[in-house]
Image (cartoon, rainbow, N blue to C red):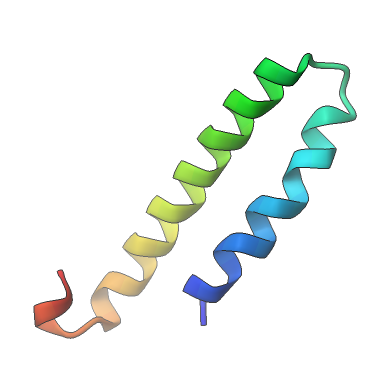
Length: 55
């Protein structure tokens, strides 16, 4: 179920980042960094539960 939450978690953070007064380019860079971080963390959390041939 954790993989399914990647999109809602990353989609809802963008307006929060934009509300702090950063320009659009900075917001996009922060959003991409957030997405990469969440994706990597979820991958590391689900790795022990994945079957051997998944990775």
